[in-house]
Image (cartoon, rainbow, N blue to C red):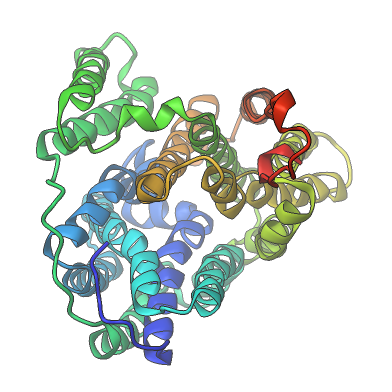
Length: 472
């Protein structure tokens, strides 16, 4: 990333970055509990609830890689401050949206801003804090902030929707963003942009078109009909553009998503498990929110309380994931995390049975505990043992991109089993959960096989063996 002078850590810098990180991740978990209220208020048809979530995560996923590269080209300070202003403006547009189309467009604008904020937040901490120990603590606090935001989102959302209406979910961003902008403006240093690596503009365009086409295909297919001209056009466009993107990335000098990265097993595994973890999480959030409020008649606050085991365990596991990985190794930790995800998703089948709610509340806790153990910082540790330092930023960007696409497709696929039309009852919940559980099980097998301990050559047996996290 951009090179800066090396001052000591400044509280305004950490406060500003953590504040923006909080609202970026809060807006992924606070919105689901408000979906039925928003759809009743603004209308928008059967796909509206999906686009409220996917409008944000799709823009976030498609532009995440470009956000980091843009910071390199024109300076991280400029991009971070611009991203903060854009997120503030987009939140205001969400709060005053007169209709569903305006809200979805504003949510997409929030996602564009988030794609600039997230990759450059870590870069700013790395370049402004020269001491390795202090830098590690700061990055740990940054990660913990994201976990806390995810954890408090459903409950805070339920309280706000019940007491002040769904628009309050977006009004609360404004003072936080203003505080963050003031802190970042005073604390961020102006550095010389790097010009050695170009922006892969054609690759970025192809990536956005491919992501949008696939998402449109999955969301609009059940409602327009799988044989409609629009849906068939999306399918053909997605297939052609994905193929062109792969060919382009193998030939261009500065690829957006280098194919060479995926020759490293740790990178492939990290991308896959992060995709699967968010796929399960957002699929569950989407369909259970509709089920709790439409079928069981719960209020947004009661719905948020039902999600407490999920996000409470997610927050706790986020805090201890790195410690567990150092103690037991990344391979064991990731396989265990995927096993917890699988068990939790299978256990959620009980939500449709005439049994006490304790069963699916425990299942939600297992799901929440498994996600940080299988991905996030644990996956980064796994990659750190295998990826050259110069390529670590690109590998981390690829992992986070797959993570966000997991959220996008989790909502889209979940809605295939449980169409959110009007106030109709949610159906086929077991199919939704079992599909996601099968994906988690497949991810566990992939992780166990791909990250097997490497054999030590016979001549090296007498030498001290270096400790690699994936071999424990």
